Image (cartoon, rainbow over all chains, first blue to last red; front, side, top):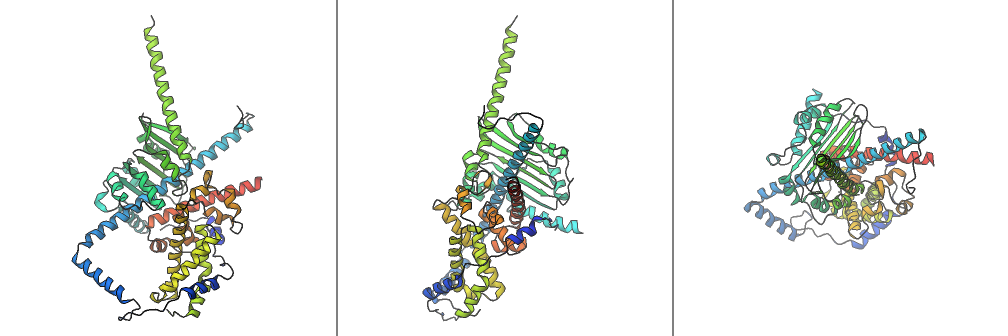
Amino acid sequence: MVEMKDDFEPELREQLRAREAPAGFADRVMARVAKRQQPQHRGWLGFGMPVWQWAVATLLVAAMVAGGLEREREQREQGERAREQVLLALHITGSTLREVQQKVGASDAVHEMNQKGAGAVIPEKDEP
Amino acid sequence: MRASVRNAFWVGLAVAATAAGAWAQASSPFPVTLEKQLAERAANYTEVSLDKRMLDFASRFLNAKDSDQGQAKRIIEKLDGVYVRSYEFDKPGQYTTADLESVRRQFETPEWTELVKTRSRDGSDDADIYMKLVNGEAHGMFILDAEAKELDFVYISGPIRPEDLQDLSGNFGIPSDAYALSKKAKEKDQTKADEKAQKSADKTQKEGQP
Amino acid sequence: MDHSQKTFRDLVERHQGRVFSIALRIVGESGAAEEVAQDVFLELYRALPGLESEEHVTAWLRRVACHRATDALRRRAVRGYAAAEEYQDGMELRPAVRDFLPLMNRLEQLLLTLPPAQRAVMVLRYQEDLEPEDIATEMKMPLATVRSYLQRGVKMLRAKAQRTLKEYSRG
């Protein structure tokens, strides 16, 4: 894959280096942890999940085996892929429109400068 | 070796981009030969082809409660197709003005109105926006953005509501001026219609004279 | 991983800059960013028994911070702080918003003019130095989308930064 070299990227990396968190951040997090801490219930299977979660998980597995969830899963994956394509297409549409708009704006500015240089008077927006 | 590995990768991505294999039998409005040539020359490319069936299918999986997805859902619900081609090249000169003209020709019919046209000498900084008007309403949009090492085509088929493009500002980056574009298209179309009517009236008057 | 308070505090201190920065650059406001960052670490505390290594923790934090920050942004949009309202013509930040971001450098401010999902991708690339393939995996996004976001994001920011420089030198 060809990497597109860009002089701007080193500056981006420099300006977007991780910042320090606000002073006392860790203290505030630990205070919230202490407030919300509850004893951990270790289920009989010893994996740290409550028993009721294991019961739900077992039932879910049984339902998947019994039912036709595989087909639904496939269709859901296809649908999610299609959704991503739509979002990508709209994103590209928006940014292309914006780039064209900037190009037109730049082109108008150059034209205006050329006109001014040639001695033509360009009326200001509010003037007739 | 490098080219074949690279191309195999991007072929894979293009297949994925047509989404769910057999579904996407969309007809691209762009010349197929040119698409293949550009893809061969590109370092990276993205091709998205979504016909009516794909858009309707995708719409079922867009969450109306999510701000981005909800807006996308509203935009595409009446569209007939969205086709995007985006190419990045590792050096200039990978396409010609003739290539660009072969794409533009598809949209130079009476029902299409040219709104934006910027040209450079060698075609490497061109931009076009065309809008299709049916009964005075926007029913299609074509955008071409050409730069030295990039080339983008966007074709949207179907009713485009100006308020949808307006609302997307900030989410999909579609500028609020897109609303103005639609208005401009209608004005231009009206001017064309007026000029045509005037010519016809003049001709009738001349024919009526002895 | 060891779940003791001391170990957890060490983890917080090691990763707080990363998590806060991700949140700040997506949400765009310091108070909201801290709220998001604190929530992420509380969630980490619960999830820690299932995480096997430092690398696993780092990847988890990146992913969850991005998602929680974009969620927070969406909630603000629903409550009326629509992202679009903060922007005016040409996607520049309104002066009122810009003035409240004195701590953010110019590129951080310009980053806020990109849509949230694209912002998150840019942060993962240029703050966290992830490759596009890893970003696609962590964000559960197609690689084509990640590449498009990066390519267009860099282009947009470069153009805006150059425009700003011209305005400063002219002014």
